Length: 421
Image (cartoon, rainbow, N blue to C red; front, side):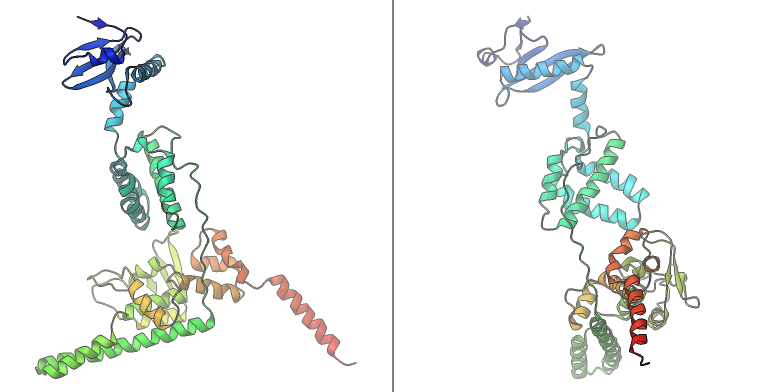
């Protein structure tokens, strides 16, 4: 028997397990009791198909009145040709941020971006995004969610802005692949933090100190090699006392800074190359005779890296390892070095350059070029910049040609005026 009456709190209270009451005010709206749970629902037809949609369990926030209003709202969508039940079902099947992120990395980042870029995307998602919103449905992420994540990284403005940039690309893919509505990217209008570019240029005195530090560590490596040879002899002769003394001496010398570390830093200084370009450099790409290295790939594509005489000298000095194609040899067989941070900390401490980063060596190359009067397009070509504005940051270091010309003219005039008739 179908029971129709206006649903009120009193009516819903009287519902017994297995009973269903239909509301007399709104067609298709009702309440039923299954076990201890009393639930509000809506039955409707769309496209010739009957649909059942659960509104929610009786209790905050659902009362007969709030559930009835929700039923009316849903029916208005049905009138507009929408199918709320199907949408709800699709929402339950929608991937989470983490699930979609994995697809984004595989089908977009790894397939269409450079390996370093793909790895950067992966790091941002796995280290920062997933812990905060990984379980949230990709279609449910709002601008407020993104803004909260961004604000939470306020002490690291550069990183915060990069996180939003990566998320924006991911949500663009979500729109393109039908997981979000077009134009719904929640990263839009999230105001970025102001980024202050940190540029550190090395003075001639600081470059001299760096050179001294590199030579000191070269000497330590040679001394370490001598001690290792003596340790081998002491081991052969079973000289325990001598062996202990030699090992202690070797420990004091330290061998964190290797010849390949020193070569990498010298190549960075003498070429202005990016760190990744030097670390991945292979001997097959190097043409010592012509003084160039032809890189098949870089941040801006294929690139010819100029190798001036000091760079050639550094290349000739670095040991080659049989079976390893790389110039800057790493700890693993056949691999290149992947991280210079630990030895760099040792070197800059000895040189008393605590605030100098490895990337500042590239700035040093560019700043010396600019202050030497070289044209910005030439500097940009040496650095491998694809955009002129990237090189423009060094413009303030260059001599103003108008100022130089004026000084030259004035000097000639002053010289003439100084002559006695």
